[in-house]
Image (tube, rainbow, N blue to C red; front, side, top):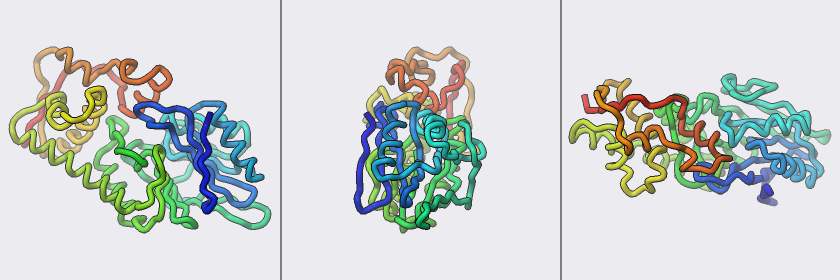
Length: 317
């Protein structure tokens, strides 16, 4: 069953989807923002009928109907239930111009999503273009409560994967810097996973510093000589559980793509077959990492869309 999480002092209600996994943590957070007898749903989540039922029921418990559906990005744990919720409520679905899911209304930087009930009470979301984790990622600002709904840009526990080809490390770092600089005075971040964040500026500083630290570690390792991605992962993520090393490899690749484009790193293709250890990290059997119900999420989050036929070695320029 989906789990509604109440905050009586807020117009925001978090409803946790029952899709826990290593990549979704305890599950995907869906949110309802109330304006009298109407509500905006943010990230209806995976295509689980019981979760859609829970969203409708939570709204009904406050004598409200869902009047708008806003989706931060198209990953399989955030977007698919939008169509199901639309079918139940006839509420329009709002999403990015590059959305990979059906939308009724395209929104982008500077747009607003507004609802109002008969009494005149209004809920308004300001739309922020937030690329990096995904090309179609949006963040929504709810100024009335100083809240940011960040999807997978910032989450309540740990950090997120930026995985090529759809993730872009430099775009993601620019998004983090922008959120800190322009919205650092927000009171709460409601991320796509984990608990609400009550010190947004500190969390954004933490995320920015973490990305800078990882890049420094990669450059330091390459300063010692040529390295493959598996070698970099083994050195930098030695204290991370090995089951997560394939995700770490995708993360390292994102940094290396940026550093190569900036001519700070160069690479060459090695004239040999991949070892079994390298294949397990670079082209893993995802079914050994996540359960069958989570495979689509894993493929989307980690960006696996092709077989790895060769291995590159990287060095500092």
